[in-house]
Structures are given as structure tokens and as C-alpha cells.
Amino acid sequence: MTIIVATKNAHKVEELSKMLEGIGKIELVTMKDAGLDAEIEENGKTFMENALIKARFVCNALGKAALADDSGLCVDVLGGEPGVYSARYASENGENSSDEANNEKLLSKLSGISGGERTARFVCALALVFPDGREICATGICEGLITREQRGEGGFGYDPLFFCPEFSKTFGELSNDEKNSVSHRNRAIMQLREKLKSIDY
Image (cartoon, helix red, strand yellow):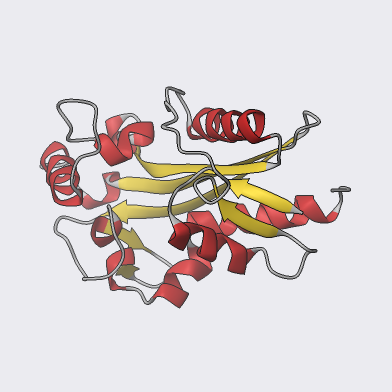
């Protein structure tokens, strides 16, 4: 079965394909490779709403199963910010802002907040939508703390600020294998894998 991933990022498709290996003949392709070149407006209020918006759009446009994800960082003391605005947290025009600008804004808003109150989590929502109307949703969460300064050269986004208790390091200090073993995306994919095993597709 071919599943169209609601992204133009070939690297993301490759990563997702590896995580879904072994559960049947599934081929993942980007929406661009499937002949769809569109900008999808993500105006949901939650990660899952955004994932469903993207997956439904692609499924309806191409008539094939579509998979989409939406993810970001939620900080408790900030009422869940940056949340669905994670990629454009420091933006003034609604476009995505740089990792550096987003991280600087987050650190600024957390100045004066003690270590124990800097709890946060990365969240990944996955939505798989079929042409017959079936929808499978999965959510992965990774709990952690926000550090006071960036640590590590790896990862992207908020990774250098996200302290992972399992490794006593930030995501920016972890190897790819270490990060993938505990990441919110991996946990969401594992949940999706289990759900796919019990359905006919």
C-alpha cells in the first residue's frame, strides 16, 4: 500500500519509513512525489487537529491514504507555549522563525523561573487518513525540563534546551540513536505501528 506523507521533506519520509518497517508492504512517498504541490494551512488549536487537517487534505486531493504529523514543545509554566506555534514562536508575520530566535524568546520568557518549575514536554501527533473515511491517530510524548542555556550541537529546534532525564543530557547532546529511542515522534510511530497491525489495509 502506498501512503502519501503530507510533507515535501524527503528526509522525514525516509525516517518514517524506517520506523514502520516490518508491518506489511507499505511504501511512503512525499506529496510532491505524488504530484501534489500545495501549501496546507495549519489553523488547528492542537497538534492532532493540525495533523488531521494535513492528512485529510492530501487524502481528499489524491484519493489515497495520507499520513501527517504535527509536533512541538509545551512548557507548563507558560501555559503550554509555544505549543502549535513552536516553529513560529518568535515570528512577527506568521511565518516560521529561526531556531535561534525561538530559543532566545523561550529563554527570555523563562528568565527568573527556577529549575524545578521549567517542566516541559515534546509532543508528536500522527494522523493516518484513508479514502474510505477511516482515521487512525497516535500521540507520542517525551517529558523533560528546559535548561538555562543551549547545550549540544546536535538536533534542531528546541533540542539544545530540552533536558532529557533518561540520559541526563539535552536532546542537542544526544546521538541520533539515543534521541530516537526516547523521542516523541518515535513513541507516536510505535503506537501507530501497533494500531496498523490490527486493521485491514
